[in-house]
Image (cartoon, rainbow, N blue to C red; front, side, top):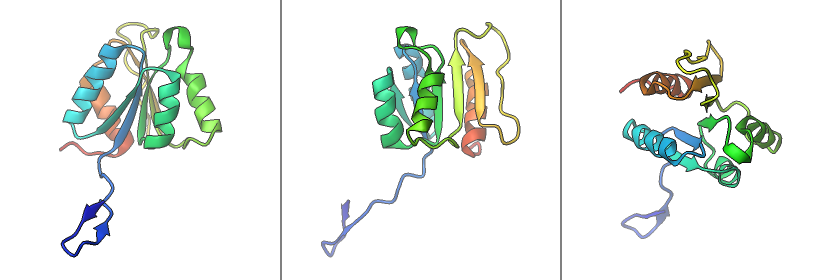
Length: 142
C-alpha cells in the first residue's frame, strides 16, 4: 500500500508485467532464463523442485510456465502440471516444456495458432524461445 498526502492508503496498481514461472532442477538454466527474461521486461519466479513449484504456481498465478520435463529423481513435470490443473491451476496458462531428452538439434515443436504447448530440446535457441514466450503471453516486441 502507498500512503497519499492526506494519509489515506491506496492500493498499488497490479504489475502489468507478464509473470513467468520456470521449473528446472538445473540452477544454471534457471538463472540464465531468469536474468534474460527479466531484462526483457518479464516478472520471473523460479522453482527447483515440486514443492517450490506448487507454492509458486498458486501464489504467483503465472501467465506462462516453462517446465523441464525430466526433473531427475523427482519425476516428470508433465505429471506435476496435470496434478496442478486437477487441483485448480488454470489450464489455459500456456506451457513451454524443455528437455535434454529431445533429440539435440531438433527444431522446437512450436505453437500453432491458438496452441498453448511448446516443446524445446536443450540446448535451445534463446531468441526462438523469446519469440514463443512473447507469442504465448501476447507481448509485442518493444
